[in-house]
Image (tube, rainbow, N blue to C red):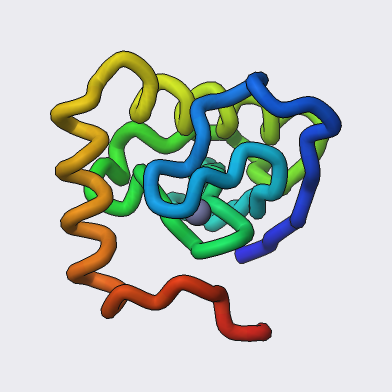
Length: 110
Ligand SMILES: [Zn+2]
């Protein structure tokens, strides 16, 4: 598992986090899921919201994984795909996520 925090310089580039409204600070995560396959996804840096938590299959898959200039945009587009133009899913994700994470609003220092 590797992680990398990154920041978007402009707002409006991606769908804001449905939980806290953040749209510039994110954390990219990469985890090996098979011998020659890694999953890469993005979560909100402010509150830790992860729309792929209930949709593991939607995570971007990459042979080598890692959080870099190639994988981050792909993972970010998954974030956007999952949240944009789907208000009904949006609410569902947030409700489930809040339930699973006990309403925590701030990420604990790691
Ligand atoms: Zn958030």
